[in-house]
Image (cartoon, rainbow, N blue to C red; front, top):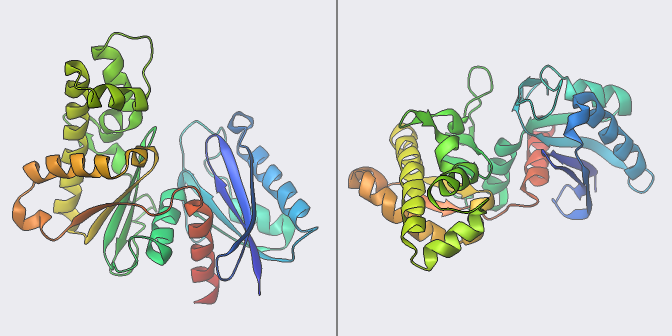
Length: 293
């Protein structure tokens, strides 16, 4: 059975593992991204890991999940934040394939997240769904008519850049936005998302106002997406899912107050089934789709 190495390039860590064709994870580890050293440094460290892993496993290919706008065919970084210097324009697929001789495929991380959910998670029965990841920012992916929708320049799903009440969606509906609002409204040096929700659960008035504002912004954005895409499901992943069913119940209540019943009746809001390994699994789904189908 063929074996592949998969990487999930994040802002803090690069997760990597060896998976077989059945998506069994045979080993996994992580190393610091060291993003400040730039894009080429990341590529060189990935190549070094591939060579190390090859000493124990016979690898058939390389599957990569990465932050940023990625051309899913050429594996080039089309756009990215400044978190990784000199990342834009980097030919990840070409560089790794040339250096290792292994077929390589690269895809945006939230698109990988969606492919993992379609293959094994809470979107298995869906032909049309959208995925949001809510953490320090908001990422998105669109799956329409039984395939990923990438857009004209492969940047479809940048939901965090939508405007809500004159501000970017991710500025008011991510964990970052939640914490910034709490720091402004509740006196304390620096809040965490967990602390804010704990205070909210205790009934503290200011915390209730903060959380209600956060849910209002989040529900407004999701409501707009439901009107635009009319999906079977909206899947939500990322750090916010740590609150579990309680988060889902609270959010659903606000969404239902904002959306016409004739629309929400055909869309369900769910949490994603996978989180930690979704990038690697989805990257391999993409690899196999590109090379075996």
